Image 1 (tube, rainbow, N blue to C red):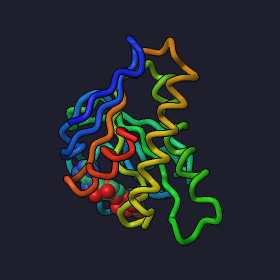
Image 2: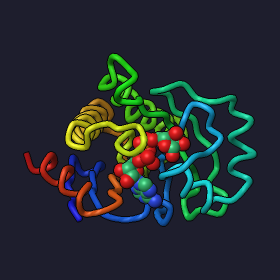
Image 3: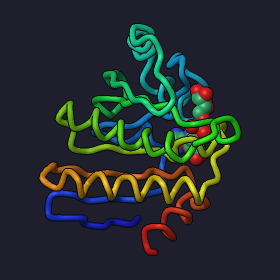
Length: 175
Ligand code: APR
């Protein structure tokens, strides 16, 4: 695990694990329908139970780069922030859309007085975003946001689904 204090109020963590086992607020790498899927989306819906899908149906989807919040239901997490990453080969400016996912998720967390948020490696699975590039965008965007909101106390965690993914974040964090 990597832990980096950004300030006395803010910390970034990188850890290997299953995001559905984390408390606080977890971020779902969803699709624009918000009606579930495979990967981390499937795992979160499975762990949360059917009430999550019921609430998602009321949200009328989510545009790529945007973020919407629901309760966590049977998850340990009290809230889930659903964001939709770019499909790497489809969008002409995937790096901007991926940055928006992290920024908008942090914005929604701040608006909901959330002080612990865990991100998966958005877009790096089904959506095909190169893992090193995505890790660089994730870490830079979070660091920039924390600097812009230095008075907001929060722990931001990157949860990697294996050592392979973790190594990319470790290299970026230590650069
Ligand atoms: N915990 C943490 N990370 C996970 C978990 C988990 N339980 N399951 C998968 N991951 C990781 C994957 O290893 C990958 O690094 O999440 C990252 C994102 O992969 P995907 O879940 O495939 O998400 P994404 O690439 O953003 O594609 C989204 O896939 O599941 C569908 O409905 C979803 O259409 C959407 C698309």
